[in-house]
Length: 134
Image: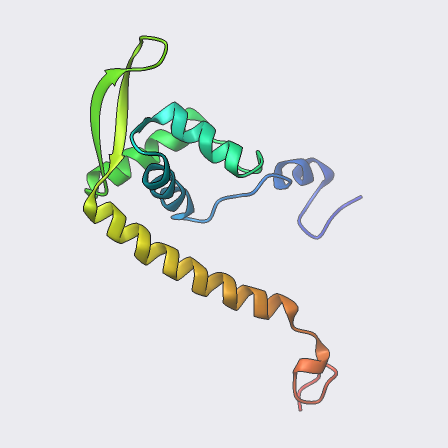
């Protein structure tokens, strides 16, 4: 069976959420704001846990986000020892990062409100009532 999105093989890949540009950065900022200083592996596992495993992050994906956020000054990084006594880089959100988090959260709240309205639309909501041009 072929779905509107492609082959059966592709359906398995689509069952997990494909992240839109910028959403992972927002998730990382929110995780650090809520949980405090964490290392990259811990951030990734927390996002996976909170998403109900709908978002699965590989090491390359999470670290690309962390580098980007550090370069923008939204997080700080420092070396320390992890819970199992291994050297690890720990990340913390900065004041600038908190401001960016608030701005991005407002944007996503507005966007999800718009998407809710668009997805709830039916033929009775448009002039002419049948989806046909009025």
